[in-house]
Image (tube, rainbow, N blue to C red; front, side):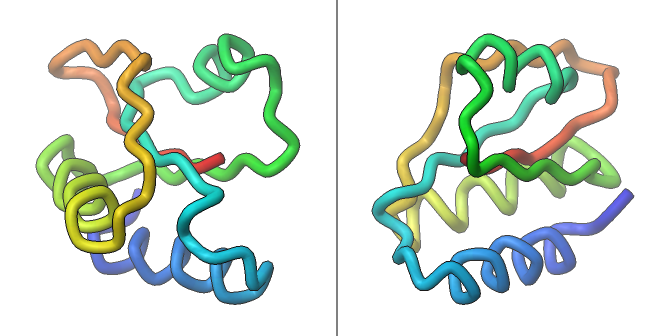
Length: 89
């Protein structure tokens, strides 16, 4: 599991490495990343990270959607008390 800073750095490395800019990405939170990926018809560029807590996942989500203007993916279901994952595609 990772904290908000670790996940944010990992996402930043992917965006910089692919030189794609943030406008082509979406970000979300789920408790079942494999189901969410399936629901999205298996996007080719997909990565997810387990967050230490839902709070840490929310920090990452808000930073990237509010400050960096990455598109939020809000179609995911999250059940409180379950493990939280941050995902990008």
